[in-house]
Every structure is written in C-alpha cells, then in structure tokens.
Image (cartoon, rainbow, N blue to C red):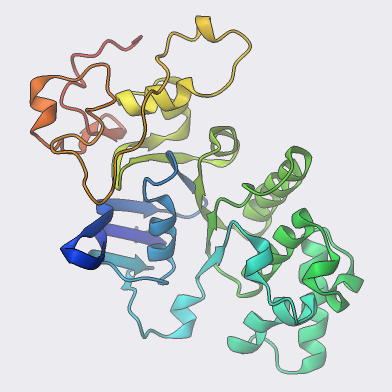
Length: 317
C-alpha cells in the first residue's frame, strides 16, 4: 500500500557563513499510513520542526525525497495533491492574520482550492467548520485578538481541515496552552481523527501527549532517528539508551522505582555534531566503537533502533 506521506532518506542542511553548515536532519526515513498518528519526539534542537516543514513542502530536502500519496513534493506541484497534507503550527497567534476576521482566515483554503462555488456557500461552510471544532458561528466575525489561545488553536485546526486533507502535520500543537486547554485540544484531535478519517504527524516534546495520541513513535536525536516503532512498545519497553533516558525524564510519584537513568548534559551543536554515535557523549553505555562508528538504524522485530550495543544492554536497564 502506498503511504499517505513518506520521507525517503531525507537530509536537510542549512549553510551558514564561513563555510559552516547546520546538520538539521540527516538520512531520515518515515512512513505514515491511513488512520495512523506518528509522533516524532525528542529534545529541543533535534530536528523535529524541520521534519514537519519538509513534510508539508515549506522547505525542500538537501538529499532524499518527500512523497505525498506517492507523488514527490516539489516547489511547484498541483494543488489537489498539496492540499492532502495540511499544517498546524505551534504558535496560533502568528498563524492567523490579525487584521482579518476569523471567518476570512478559515475560509481561505476554501477559496484557494475552489471548494465552494459562492460566497454564501463559503460562509456556511466556515460556520460548519467552526462548529466542528467546538466554536459558535459568531466567532467568524471576530479577529484573533478577541479570542483565547486555546480557541485560536482550534481555529487553526478548523482552517487545516477546511482543505479536506488526509494528513495533518501538528507542530507542537499544545506547547503554548494551559493544562486544561491542552486536554480540550487533544480530545478534539482524537474526535476529528475518527470522524474525518485523518492521519497525523505529531511533533512534540511532551511525551504524555504523544502517549495519548500516537499509534507509532519516532525518536529523534540531533537530526537522526534513533528508535522507531509501535507507540505501546516504545513507551513500555524502550530499546535505545536515549529513548530510555528521555522516558526517565517524565515526572512520576516515586522516581527511585522507575529503574531508568535520567538524562544528563545538553544536546550537542548541530553545526559541530560529535563523530560516531551523536549520543555517545551522554550515553551511560558508551564503548570505544561508539565514538567512531555511526550506528545504522536496524530492524529489531516490529521496530528499528540505532545502537551499536543494542544486544548487549539488558532489557531492564
């Protein structure tokens, strides 16, 4: 079956002055099927948001290919293909034009893609979309400054589903929201996934959000995927040392009983990545080979892991 969205050995580098280069994404391959939610998790600076922008065509790969329904994403491609993947950013305040009404912003995809034949039909559809995300019709006449952050994020979701996509890429959709509002947005996303048959790519550093929404998880570290597989197995039986230490950072009532080692140190510079395994300066299981050899992402059952010592690290470690 052709995946709805596919990144095939994608690399993205950003040149800087004096011949320096930011290695934002290195050799990343991801596949998203119908009804799936792929959560991409990791610390800030690991390349998650760059992957999101690659997935929707906002930037192009340095190497590799991004495909939507099997069609390579190019700078110029037909709108019918492009609208299958929509984007929800982490900052709803910057995502909407403050000078335009909410109705205008939500209705723009309808106009751009020719999904309504008249202004009256478009206005009726905007009302339907707002109600679909739990907002009353009168919000169409308001401007972004007149609603709360949680309501704004629901409005950006309404604008995304207006294009009738098959995939929505969510870049930290709850990062700027209060705890109670986060729950509202997450429940909305779950409802829309079921009612509209959507698939999601969820970019997040909030592991509790990923656990609640994801069917599959990809763990990124310094631009590379280090572990990938079904969400349940990633969260209950992580293999890669970085995944284990990332999960150890989740607050629990008695951290002395979790049996995982917490993360120490900082993510290295993407301009000067360490040789060998990028995680080796922080890894408690580092060996001499880890400092020289870049580990391959190898299949282990129904998941993949990139660790030279995978078979040597005990499951309970």
